[in-house]
Picture 1 (cartoon, rainbow over the protein chains, first blue to last red):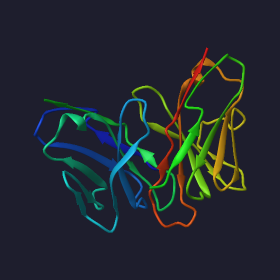
Picture 2: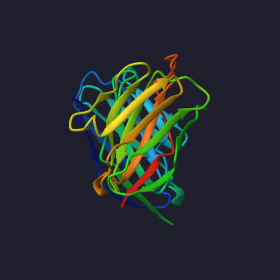
Picture 3: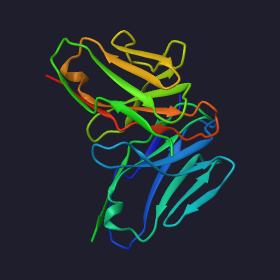
Length: 111
Length: 117
């Protein structure tokens, strides 16, 4: 089955800096890669996603890149703000199938 | 956007009792729903895939007789934790796919915090 590895497990940045979180996946059939932000006790919130036919996608301060050959994808957050502090999860799935999540990254943005 | 609800949001039960958690898609039909479990400070782990009108598909290591899943309609899936024990205490989250297959995105419920005493 699919295995998703996520790094780093914790990330601390100063407000205004950029944050990068990286994930690798094992199943070459995976074609959908969402990123979620989860606050304590809340549901995961989709912040951006990318499909395998695209190499990069951007939405304001958030961008995701995908390297299908290397089987890795990354989340980039620019101009970080304290409200960006949360746990971030990457995930991978095949079409409309089940999601396999990474281990999560605790992002802390210091004012 | 699509809305998924869960009920109850929190439940405390005694060891040995059973607890039912409901997952509803409020404004769309879902042929497939997923049930996840999340321990504190851990990731979401898929427990099972719930298919409307058929038996659920359980992930390896998940006891199907302990975690009963029923998906009787296109808007409702239920997870029953039978003979609950303290180690079953966790955050249970469901997600749903629109049945029309228009999107790859799963819509998550708000989660149910189960505490077994």
